[in-house]
Length: 431
Image 1: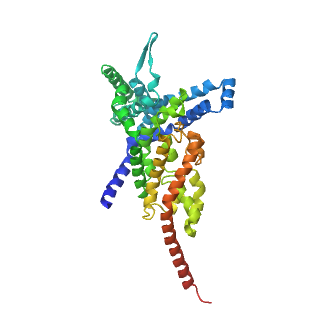
Image 2: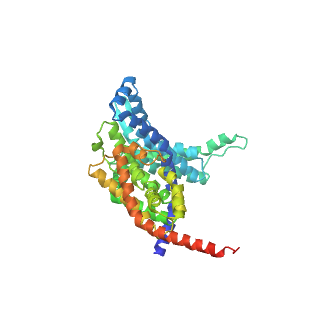
Image 3: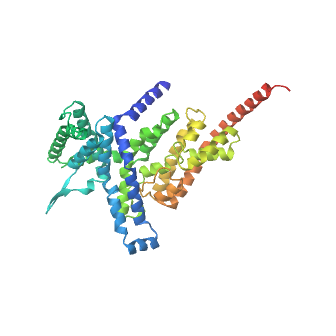
């Protein structure tokens, strides 16, 4: 087992330090502000409260809220292409801004065109979630070619008397022209295929199968299981799997928001799972569902050490910050707490999934809730008061799972505290 775990840890460290995955992870994370702006705008536009609907219709702000959504989440792939190119170029020690501009141009070249009577224009439907995988792949490929050409000094050298910013601009000019020409050739070539475009190829061959895979709750459970095993061995599992979660599940959230913006009812939303589902239910209070652990310790534990740690961790835990309990108890490499620490988020995901799939609870709108939003409030924003109730059920389920292990740990801690107290009394000098 140790041999296999060593291999897993080595693989996880390589994934965490991989330049390409880091570029995707950091790039998609960089779209968070845009996602939240669009999510809030959509939430305000479709909020099912009649007085509010009448108010925004009266003042005429409803179309502007939907426009804000269309210019943020609706063109998410544009922002992703720019930011992934920026981060990849920076990872390879090249000009990040030039890399970002090239990445954005190449993505737009891969995007299908619509033929209109007045001419051709970009098909905007491919600028949202549908084009996200194209943005990731084209950004990595073309930005990497630019970085390769720059590293090989295939540049235009200017005299030393030329100002530095002019020299740097011309240095990247030739690689940019080569990469841009290559993107045009690729786009031209795919125009002769049955896919009609590179985006069509990526969506058919890569995106559709991956999204079919991600629509299964068992796939999400497997990803979270790997995350929790890494956490148990001291590696930040959430960072390792974060890029996979975003790439696979963010498009599902966007599809829900698009349907909501088009006037669909909650029951007609296409997806149960999504990045929002993972954020809301994939370990309430932080990795390992540690909010439940804190509750169990505060209610049932008699160990002074455990109660002190739980008291210090309670408020951060409400805001999904669980490092104090993870490293303070600790949960890392703690054999007693291994089973509930790993299994609790899996149990919460299963309860939430089947609760929503059965129709008892509504599907999540896909709205992106900012990290650090208090537990229950984040559920309310993501899907209404019913989702907050479902969170409470999940928290209680994890409490039941943690309870016997906390009692065992508590007994061990109290025995140690008593032993330490006897040692202190025995070593006190006699007056």
